[in-house]
Image (cartoon, rainbow, N blue to C red; front, side, top):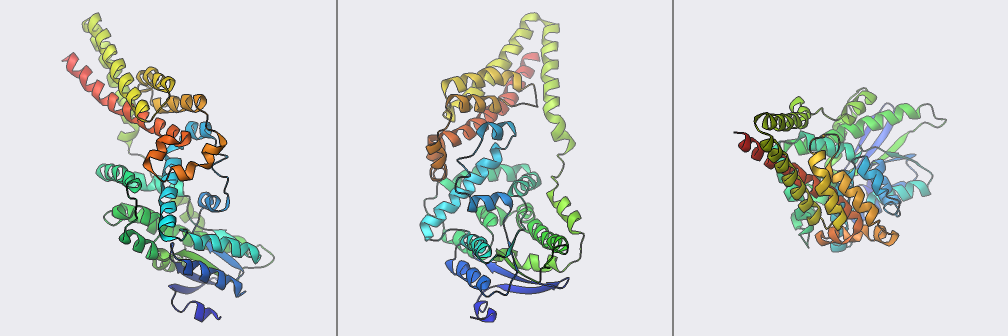
Length: 403
């Protein structure tokens, strides 16, 4: 079958840039036909390179079945990657539920592109931005109420036993990340910009950068099949035709927006205010000073312990949260959740079969409490939440005692 016949009913665009022909193929992430078309296109021997809408982490997720078995929980906690891992697991759970409902593995066309490129000895370019960078830039771009909406809405993914027709249609024409946050991206310009538009720019720059790097190779690239979600077709077509400094664009889009000065200073300011309150209390009356410290310890200890308990932490984990929180709340460089999660990991070290069951357990909300791996993530998150609430509550209590 010829190229024109294969592409007859497929969204696509052909672009020539710097002497190289790019065939941009817009695929559906829940369509076996898209996977079949990718396989057939590569078999035509028309292409010497295949580019895919994946970063290294999602590439590993597709190609390495043992990725969770080798997870180092202690390193994840110490490197403050628990939020990223939790997000990846939630997205993976959403996609696995789609696979169960539709009988088609989401992202099957990407997996097929990887397999066919390897089988046919073609170059394989991973052109998408790191999902970690994308999520961090997305988070920092949101206003406070948008963040609250996203957090509470995110839990809804686990409550839906069936994925709605609207969400499925979005996957047929859009992007996996966008569809996962479908109900938010529709009403948020910030979400659309970071999840879609920035990645269009990034992938265009990566393609141009790869061309520059490839010129030093013995065999230059002449024809590239670019496999992307259909939602990226228009944007990538536009940006790929623009001459830019690809390395500069990549660097800019990989840079996290700086936190506003007041956000960076707020934790230290809170510490200063609380310590000043203690000093003021002791200057007025020794008993008052000790009462203020007692208020701080009680609220921080109890609320952090409640967070660890809700997460299903071991009694010693709960105790560690209670003991650590009053001190960590005065030190912005360390969190009570980190200490509690480390204690939970050491006391209830997950076994190999529990890592193997991780993806299946993460598909349902109760599975996050059942599996020791995800329970550690919950201990980290909920202990920190309890500590954060306690800081504000006890701060107001101390203020009232002083006046």
